[in-house]
Image 1 (cartoon, rainbow, N blue to C red):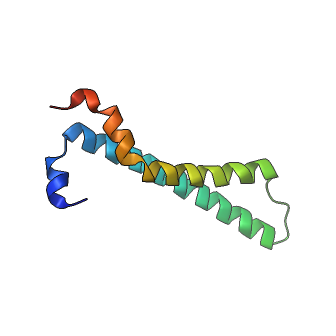
Image 2 (cartoon, rainbow, N blue to C red; image 1 turned 180 degrees about the horizontal axis):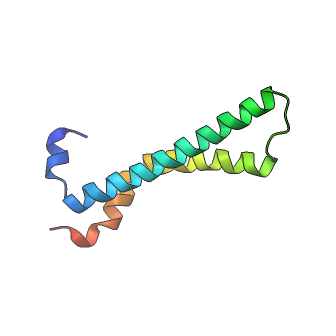
Length: 84
């Protein structure tokens, strides 16, 4: 997104985009940290989390990536009523 387009964007859309991207980053970070911890637990030979937790960790990373990719569309739909 060019700088000119960013400055012309609705301030509500900017805020919504920031919050959606922040949440997406949190999902990715949380899932990646959990997957890393599970990986090192398995390498040490200790019993690791059950398979359902592993699936939830992977889903949180995937959800974060999807949110990050679709953040512009979601922010636009959320702020349609505030357009000037």
